[in-house]
Image (cartoon, rainbow, N blue to C red; front, side, top):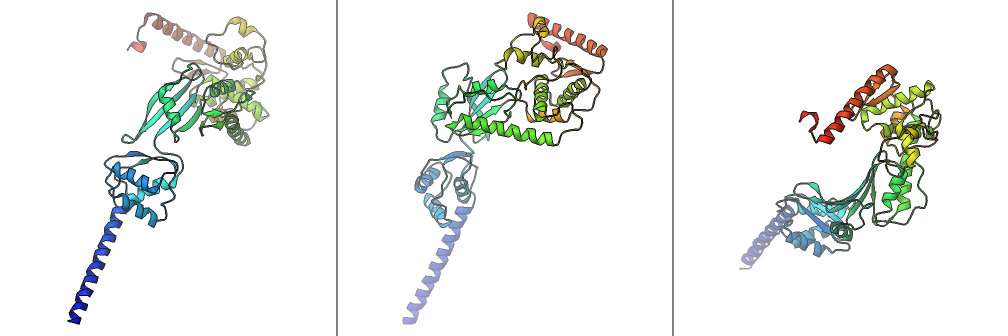
Length: 395
């Protein structure tokens, strides 16, 4: 009888071992295998949130099948106390192991709301965007100009109340330092003040990730630091025999190029015209410099130049002065700086708009005059269409 009891006990023990092994294998598969999530979701991990709270949230959202198993797995992998605050995109069918890796890795949030402040040449636009996790794309929630509109939209107020909202400041090529500082003074997600306008040309047109409450002065310093690095690198690798001898002069040239064309492929050709003119002792005769002398970079002129302004001898009137103006006339981007220091090799001395957004280039004054006449006809036709409301290009 004793042998029978021992045999039964051994059999039961083996059965229990098999059951435990089966349960452990099932648990492993549940933890590492595809999860039940039918479509992507945004998951917010609150600051200081517990593992128990997060696992319950995940189970309620249908991202995991067993909250307790998620907690056990987190503890077993020593990640139970390593949750990182933020909003995260959880992909469709993500495993418990994968979700745990996402919420403990940290870094910039991959989901939720972001505020992008775009500072342009003619206007500034603050956009509130939210990620649609299913489409995998950001959609605009609200948009307004803080400089011209005193009352922000309610969606911005709600976004600023969320602790994990991300902020970005984006400078367009060709903005002036006054434009930048004026725009930044009209938002409340930056702190502190900057007394003096940064030197023209010293700010790098780029995208800047900022944190709410970051010092305005700190952001300006980062913009200046990036521009210094770009200019130093381009100057070190510059072409030979350029008609400007210092990085500061190259920056002035880059600002003229930036304001003369919005077509990337033309920058080096525009640079060649200015370089050729300087080499021949010709005046640059560039309207944007004259305009800067009038506005001092404070907004746009909003009208054409008058003959009296073209005749006035000011430091920025390149129809009346020899060589470069005394300072940059805007903050040029990296491509314009590269063009100034690596101009195309051409014999061009003139260029004029051609109605397509680009320019026609020419070597002689006779060719240039023909192009100017062509451009004036295009202008006249455009004005006629605007007055009559007729569709352009026959459409």
